[in-house]
Amino acid sequence: MSSPSLTLPSQERPAARRRLLEILGALAIAATYVYLVLNQPADITGGPGSASALIALTGFLAGAVLLIVAVLPTLPASTLVLIPVALVLNIVLGQFVGSTLVPFYLDAIGTVLIAVLAGPAAGAATGALSSIVWSFFNPTVLPFAAGAALIGCLAGLAARYGLFRRFYLAPVAGFATGIIAGVVSAPVAAFVFGGTSGVATGAIVSAFRAMGDTLLAAITKQALISDPMDKAIVFTIVAILVYALPRRARQQFPFIRRHRVLAGTTPAADARAQGPAQDPVQGPAEGPAQDSTRKG
Amino acid sequence: MTASSAGRTAAPARRERLNPLTSLTAAAATAVITTAAGSWPLSLAVVAACLGLSVAGGTARRVLPAGAAVLVPLGLSLLWLHGLFFPEGRTVLAAWGPARITQEGLEFAGQRILQLAAVVLVLLLFSFSVRVPDLVAALSARGVQGRFAFVLASTLTLLPAIAARAQRIRQAQESRGLVVSGSLVSRARAFRLQAVPLVLSLIEDAGTRAAALEARGLSNTGPRTSYREVADSGLQRAARTVLVLAALAAVVLRVAQAGAGG
Figure 1 (tube, each protein chain N blue to C red):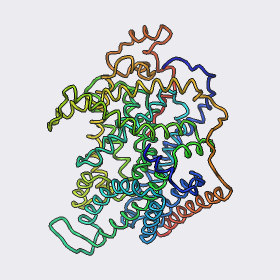
Figure 2 (figure 1 turned 135 degrees about the vertical axis):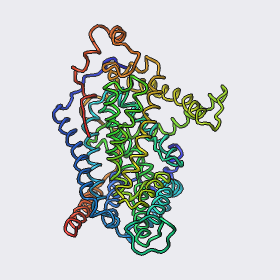
Figure 3 (figure 1 turned 90 degrees about the vertical axis):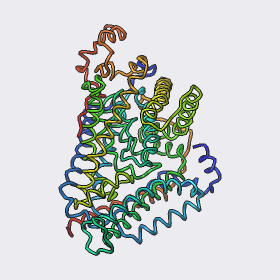
Figure 4 (figure 1 turned 45 degrees about the vertical axis):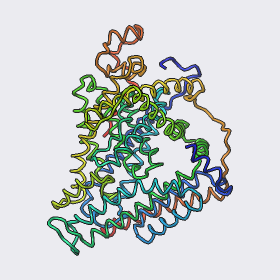
């Protein structure tokens, strides 16, 4: 799969314009979040159809779409064909867990898998696309596109900096990702839905509401309980899956080769396999599109 | 998806002339305007209209279960949350310890549920009545990335295929002696035994598909032609413009109102 294309090389769009779109997308998400958190006390019980719900929807969706537009054209075909597979894994596993009485979601296994195999940019695009395509069956996941993109991006960065090389570090990285993702997704749950979509997560929010918290505070606390555990489980499952793959299957991904994402694949052995032209240890100097984003 | 496409061929010819982008715009604009208005009579009217349209279009049997699967847990969660615990509520109807049923809480939950039901049903009505190949062709003709169209179409067609493959893998492992008992360790082992072959075969398949797509010029730029002609008309184009403008106006009006009124 790493063989070069048989057809004419594609003309890439200027990198500066893509970078601008990426930055705009990240800014839209960050600005929406800051606005929602600053403005929440005046608006939360103002009834449905509040301006905050519209701003949350517009800002987070626009940011996610900008990220997709920026990243999607840069992905190689071997990564692109994995995205539908990841989306199906997200949907099948997420739909199942969402209907059970467990306060977890497990709807990001596919996204994190792509992020580990192909890098943060691919992970972010997969997360955002996952929400958009999933909304064909379940429109309530659409507003969480920005949070899903953030999870994919953070998982890719964790893989990029070697947190999947030690098995016990993967859940730690998942825990940290969950904290950030939970805090970002909480305003969406609060303003757009006025609660959470699961029964078990709703019970946790009720407990905090019973203590007199505002809705946003209660949902943020619930997210801080559910999300880190959830993402720690997801990252562990993905680590198990990736290490169970045969060498040939994982080494077809340039991101894994270049950044030595997984343990046991020594750079020397890789260099022999790839020929002397590539040196994975010095790889980051090449600066490809897959690993150059830092969002959130 | 095979069952659904069989259902669609029986649909009236009138709907086939409707451009998928027109119905997408109509669904999205309805969802935005309902959210912006936030009035329960409008939400109720949208819910009723969606139910009527889905019965008329013959999609009710798939829209209703999908809608219920989303809305029932959400509705229960909201009723439980706001019905029992709404510290901002003043009019207490009943109270047991920390749990107080308040009028404000019930109103809040009811309005939210109605509004979400309207949005969910209108979007589901669109996604269950649209022909995916038509939508992909219409999106490509509008210059939307062929890659996005590929991801959308590929996911929707892969979903039943992958579900069938997961089922076959489970049967194969069971025939080799996999027994899932209640304990957590056993469940985790069973999950691993099924997930690893599934993910591995999916990644292998994806590699083959990547080579095939690359050989057919997926990454090439330039104009594309399509075998599929999607009907469109000046009237539909005008309707789309009007719907987008109406949705924008609703959002601007609502945000301006909130800015003025606090």
